Length: 448
Ligand SMILES: Nc1nc2c(ncn2[C@@H]2O[C@H](COP(=O)(O)OP(=O)(O)OP(=O)(O)O)[C@@H](O)[C@H]2O)c(=O)[nH]1
Ligand SMILES: [Mg+2]
Image 1: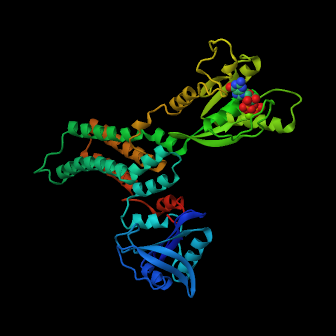
Image 2 (image 1 turned 180 degrees about the vertical axis):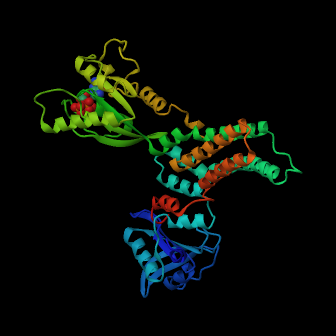
């Protein structure tokens, strides 16, 4: 983006394009008020006051709206901003955006409002990334965690670690610059200080795996022979009649996916029953191939067999395919059993999708396996970029630590500390190059 573009006034529809109660068009830049003046039918805009009236295109009235005027720097972007709240129809919002563009704004690029907010220091980069996480969160848990970063939790922690490194670095510099007046810090002090900082970084990185799982979710495939009740379980877990259930073996012939919120976003996958039969038609054969592929792609497999029929050779053949993956065995149709039984496979949950028995236990087992961490312990949500910055910071600190242990020249140690601090600055975006910045905001939606 060139400098001129950055000063242009931009506009976009900030609400999803669809039918709803309200639609929002946002304008940002120093021409915002001028444009609003041209399209608002005689409304006098007062900053800090909500205004009401009509948006017009010349003589044509487009919609009755509410306007929120913000003057720089007190706005989301830090620039002059006008937010128009109109009725939430696809064509109403488009008509209003068109008239705004006709009167001097240009369409905003992806994430451009938030990028401007970052460039105008309304948000640091970790907060800007949290905005994107919040919008795209697949579960309520992840939304709550993202909101924590939006409030600056990660930035504050990063600042705290940096302050500690800075303090130690300052003592080294003082010793180097004023050797007569200031003594170099003791090496024992340095090693202690670096170990403490590495420890703090490790605490954040320990949450990296859970951050990734919370952000991306996991894939759980239900597999087994035909007719064992896979689609019935799929529907029961979703609380939805999504997949067709019949007593005909080979009912499901395609892979069906739906999202389930178990704190972590679970993509639940129903598959075609796996069986060997020379007389299978082509569709079922392809379906079975997809089932095997789903097993390969899944993070967790629910292997199901019909407990009323017993665990047979055909079940065992499928079990052999999945047994090395993370899995739970679901012994289904226990409602048909007259007596209780002792499952032969480890990790078996006895269920009946018909009488809804054992489903809570199954969900609990799923949760425990998916989160081999406790979600409450996910103190810090990070993305890959932030994890990479932390890892680089950790490497530099480890270099400094090793050097301090060898009692090397403190000038050399200081160089490592400087790179450690630079890596931390990248998290909040105090130091960042344009390519990385554009890459981050290119993933945002238009209008954010
Ligand atoms: N008694 C009893 N019947 C069940 C239970 N779960 C499923 N069924 C019945 O078993 C039959 C097959 O169920 P589905 O859910 O279609 O089985 P599936 O494993 O998806 O079968 P395919 O799609 O053919 O691979 C249906 O008639 C279901 O009503 C259960 O817990 N108890
Ligand atoms: Mg099925």
